Image (tube, rainbow, N blue to C red; front, side, top):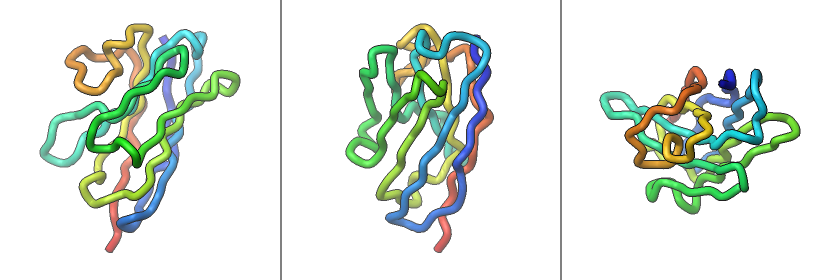
Length: 125
C-alpha cells in the first residue's frame, strides 16, 4: 500500500481556483489507480475524478470541464486542479489509491485501500 498526504486546501471565493496535491510514499506509485473524492456536510462521500496507470481519466458530471486530475509519477504526486469553484464544491477532499481501478472511479461503492486525510475547501463571501 501507499501512504497519502494531502495539501493545498483553503478558502476561496466563488469563481476562484485551487490546486490540491496528494503526495504518496511506500510503494511504486505508477502502479496505482488514483482518485479524488469529496464529502460535503450532511452528504455521502462522492467520487470526483480518477486517473489510471495509463493516464486515462474520468470525472463526475458535476465537475466536468472545471476540474482536472493529473499525476506525476516521477514525484509520486497526484493533483486536482479546480477552477470555476462554486459554493457547492465546499467539502473535505480526499485522495485515494488502489491497484483496482473500480475502487477509485466516480460512482464506486468499493473502498480503496489507501486514503489521504482530507483537506478542507471552503468559500468566503
